[in-house]
Amino acid sequence: MNEVKSTIDKRDGVSNSDFKIGILGGGQLGKMLGLAAANWDVKIWMLDKSKSFPGGNTCSHFVEGDFKNYDDVYNFGQQVDVLTIEIEHVNTDALLQLEKEGKTIHPSPSKLNIIKDKGLQKQFYYEHKLPTSPFRLFSGKEEILDAIEANKLRFPFVQKSRLAGYDGKGVAVIRSENDLSKILAAPSVLEPLVDIDKELAVVVARNERGEVQAFPPVEMEFHPTANLVEFLICPAQISDEISQKAIDVSMKVMETFGVCGLLAVELFLTKSGEILINEVAPRPHNSGHHTIDSCYTSQFQQHLRAIMNLPLGSTKMKTPSVMVNILGADNHTGHAYYDGLSEAMNIEGANLHLYGKELTKPFRKMGHATIVADSLEKAKSNARKLKEKLRVISL
Image (cartoon, rainbow, N blue to C red; front, top):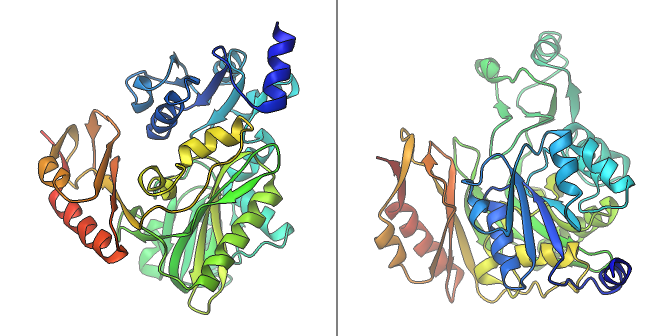
């Protein structure tokens, strides 16, 4: 019976009622993957520290454990048919061992080891002649200060922690000597401050059959202090030529890495018209949340299709959209209260996705809203209204 089951799964990528997908991480991305899987009656297992996390209510089975712990990841992986992630910073030693034993893991743990280290990631682009900004690697704060003192490092530059950076954390913009106190005490990648016209992103999917599909490029507007995406605009307000160039570069990145599942490719469009790779994430990503409401296939369904080796869905846009990240209000830490929720829900075209996090804190991602409309201008106008009306505060 097991031989028949594995043959069917390998040949067609089709699941049966016993088929289990394991997800390392039970945050909001896990939650939305669980919601997408429910439509196909696919069993989702999740591993994270608490079932109270957002994904706890959308999975078939929740295992409490630490996705950074070797034994927890290895034992969890033994119980599922396909293993994937919703966060990069997991124990890849356990994943490599599971892969060696024949377990299907997407993305490949060897590629995940490259991607989760921003230094290795930049070296990968350089070695494969993929367009990215110049960079230097530093072991820590003292080495950076010594380079500045010796006039071997010039302002302005961006410092990115090689490991564990996410949601604006682990990034420092150093414009002059007045910013030296902001320098991070961690092994880092340093890049000159790029002369950016726009920040773009393209989410690409690939399955084991070699099919590759890209969603339309989106344009990201960042919060001025939190370094988090505040508005995400689809389609990006760029020419058809630049749009195709962004897609071509992103498809090339996906093909070079050769991973299965999703790869979110963040890009810089320079004022001279260059497309440069900023960084990638091998999983569903904030830059693809709008696809739930505005595209034929959501990024979450597409990730499941890819890791199950099913045909990829259409990435066509149904309607223009603007995604708004719903962040915890400044100076509010405690039990979350959604102030202005009724007014926000009354805005035409607004689709609210609240993650179910019990506690809020400044700039924590508490949810998102996608505003769809007949025109991009109308979607942008309604997105600004929603941003003004809805605040996540503490009681």
